[in-house]
Structures are given as C-alpha cells and as structure tokens.
Image (cartoon, rainbow, N blue to C red):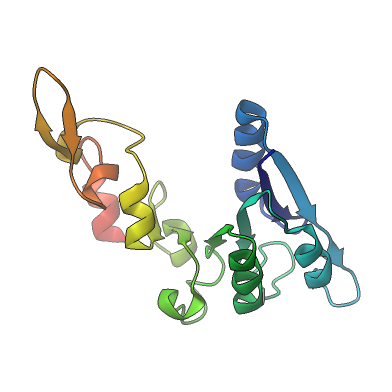
Length: 175
C-alpha cells in the first residue's frame, strides 16, 4: 500500500494528521529514526525507507524538538527518484532564517502565524501551482466558487478554491 515517511523528531502536528490519514486509507506511516550522534534525523535511514510505495515525505525544515536543519535538497532528490511528493514543515525555519521555496524544490510548505510572532489561528500553505491545481477543495462556500448551476459547481483557481467562507481578516492583517 501507499506509504508516508515522517521522522521521530517531529512535532506531533506533523505526525498525527498522517497517522489519521493512514487509519482512514490503509496507508502505512514510516518513521525515520534519529541519529543520536548527530542530533538530527538519520538521513541514511530516512533514504532507506523510500521506495516505490512512498507517496509523501513530510518532514521539518528545522526540528521543533532538536533545532537541527534537514538537508532538504538531498531529501527532495531522493523523494523525486521514487515519485514521492515532499511537504516541508517550516514553522521553525520561517521565523529564523531566509526560506526560498523555489530553491528548496518541495511541493508544499506550511508554517503557523504564532511562530512568526503573529496572531494565533492562522498560518499558510504554500504549494507549487501544478500541485494546487490538481487538488480538490476540502471545504465549500464563499469565494471558492467559480460557477454554480443546477447540474453542478466549478471552483475558483488556486489559491481561492481553498478559501471557503469568510476569511480570518484580522489574523491575516496581523500575519
């Protein structure tokens, strides 16, 4: 079956959603172990977990637990070699260092507002346009609609298709 690779050095926010998804879909979550000598993810072990069934690699740019920086280019190259997508949790890196999403080459990057001294309850998902265009909306309402007929509905292009209902305006201004 499908496999999702995360690590033992994750914040639970990048573990629990994948565990729940695996429970719903039958996917398997694999965990790259920690290299206790280096104090970070064991890159060799992580790379050994990747295979034809790997669909997603979801890892921190900088570990919330250890503070170490992941060698993103090496992970992206290995993930691409097996056809996997890469989601980068940048909650710890975005507030403390320049993050060039194009240079990193990942498919998605996520970060939370409160880690950047912004308001709680807001964050961001950056994704490659082709990835966002291939994704269906997960909520409905408001500005995410393109057209509604009695036969069906079409949706706005990204990012609008993911912005259902009234946005968190005050939080967005604060961010």
